[in-house]
Image (tube, rainbow, N blue to C red; front, side, top):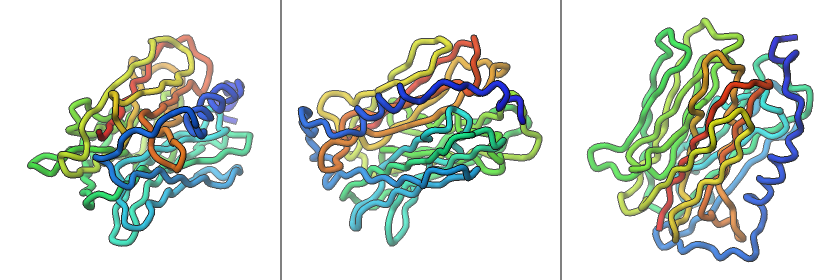
Length: 300
């Protein structure tokens, strides 16, 4: 049994499920935001079967004649012991989608778990998905930044992917800039086990017409050693097109701190709401302090 397994955090995920149910549930009292800048907006999702497989991938498909603007995903039931390694918007000639992969590298997850993917889609001109890749370079972390230069449009969403990390390198950031000009992704090696093989991190930016994305906002959690559940709202009148999160103020000598969820709000009719919610937790108890930064991009 690995060190992580011996020191596994055994708290339940009830608090997470309760808060997520608010985000994902039907909120009859809420009014759907105006979506003139995001016609035909809809959120789709895909949930893998619950089980004990070490690698799980969910694929949320956009409806016909719509295109992905962004998305998100979450790990359910793994207790911080599985890590996100891919949050990827994909555009094809047939059907856009958003794919999410998580890995339990050490076999530490002893309960049935699953992965859920969310795609935010709209009836807009086909976006360009740009990417940038950076190798680890011998460090414990590495960043890659993708953007939309040269008049390619605005970043409405994006994602990130770890290649070659075998679950011992996780996505510690998939973060949009407030200026909506770029998307940065960070790969972070497990601070307990490390990882000596080559790996890389790729960032993805969904580039749409400049008028599609109008505003972004950021929210930062307190700096402490507690689990973080952080809603990040659009500016008034906004409809979410994508979101991101970044672990901050993390000591690289601390036990793994896992980015667990980036979830768009879903209103009646599967319409995107005006916020996202991001969640991170420690995989083992620690007194180390850290914070969570969430970003949201919105059309209005």
